[in-house]
Image (cartoon, rainbow, N blue to C red):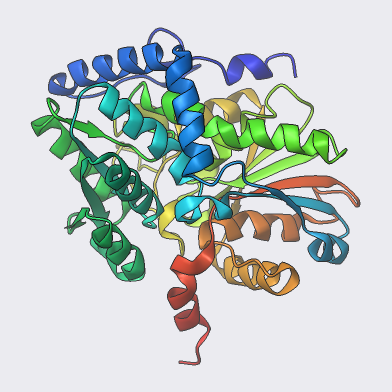
Length: 393
């Protein structure tokens, strides 16, 4: 792909990926965003910082995560499927990669507190974990709806010393948690860093988070070579804001692999959205004709967001990545399929990617195609919710 490296390169001077991205924040937050951009650029060019980041991920974060051939599922679907096992990273998902980077950056900037938003709770748990390791104060904002369906993760955050704030405004889900976290940040930028959990928000967050998560794709590309598989035909990942997908896509952007992002049907911003501004970024959003943000819905709290990261919007616009939607009704079946065929219980978010692969086997995915899927998180957090859904009423 001639333009692949360009579309996953540094954003332009306005913080944009093509027509998307930028920095749309209140005047009070502009200095904080500029400070963060300067600090990240300096740190990411500092070999000692990068080595510390990598060292912490090795010694604390569980990296490198393995590639697992999914042999029984492959035979069943007529494909050659490999899984990048981010579910085996510390705290149970890919979220730890970004959080380690941002908390190290927080210490480097001389700040003593982090705040975060969370949907499924995995980013909140990862933030609380890294904050505890570095001795940082931590507050996590979580929609009230999500605190109920992810009650276990709320307890995990509190056990790690974090304060969890239940957000009761709006839809009481991820969008509203982001709103509250940004409102909080305005009031305390001098000593607090907002540890945003996905490739969204104002510049430099989408770029910075993608860079921290690119460890996934860089590892996977090397591991696929070591397995003598080489470049897969397809690289597949679920997409909410899109950090796990951006991370694995980064390792294959300049290859011949087809990049596939799988959104929740109730929050499919690429399929159903239009350009607009939300949470400091210009991207594809679910909105009405007057620009009012519409509510998203997903069985998975981590995909329950009415937009997508701006770099993903750009990748879709230029045709480098493809985005498809999976409905709730297919997700539970996919979770059971992977669990029963491979002994791996995936997160509901991750199950969207598995559901798409199962649906498209023999269709968009030709027989014997090589597929690399990012298993972004494990399903422990979702077991109670799934049990309730599968129990007779």
